[in-house]
Length: 242
Ligand code: SAH
Image 1 (cartoon, rainbow, N blue to C red):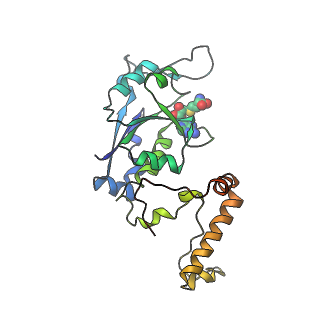
Image 2: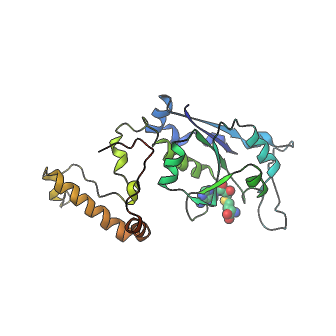
């Protein structure tokens, strides 16, 4: 079964957007994954095509209606996929969640607009909430794209050189070491000598030290978890040996 994302949105014309470019676009053309959209407005019950109304209890803005959202969700074949609403109140998106989702059948993503969505629909349709970070966007579309991109590049076959996956930031729980390429000297700055030595053991040791140092200074939260729990191990996926 192909990994399949369905996006519920008021702006289907935004998709695939960046998801159609580069390795993800090729991955879709090669049949590794597929995307389709549902326009929430098609489920409006009035001639104006509106899907929202004023908040109960008063206050600014508009809220997307539970009945219209439920009808839009119910129109989508579920196929065992998790339903995820992009929301600043959700569980923060991270690499372990992307791995988890990439190993499943795909997902159904709901993009909010306005003030958000009537609370009752989350429980009524078992919707999980996922956040892109501690900031507020104008809509869920960019967050849905980020979530889908993070998942799809982990699907076996999508990334050309699979070996680039294992050493990246967050894989194993640390940030990545610094990368260099030609020219050998750039505006008076040289490539660290060890990387030109051809001594693979020394290079691996240097990269380990850099990884630790960068994580410790930039992301004390990740470093703390790494120091306590050790490297993240993934038992159930086909992570390449590098
Ligand atoms: N009133 C809401 C914000 C609404 S923003 C609040 O204060 O929590 C409108 C929509 O943008 C949301 O329904 C959600 O789908 C999307 N959105 C905004 N910020 C987001 C974030 N950090 N992560 C994921 N989606 C977000």
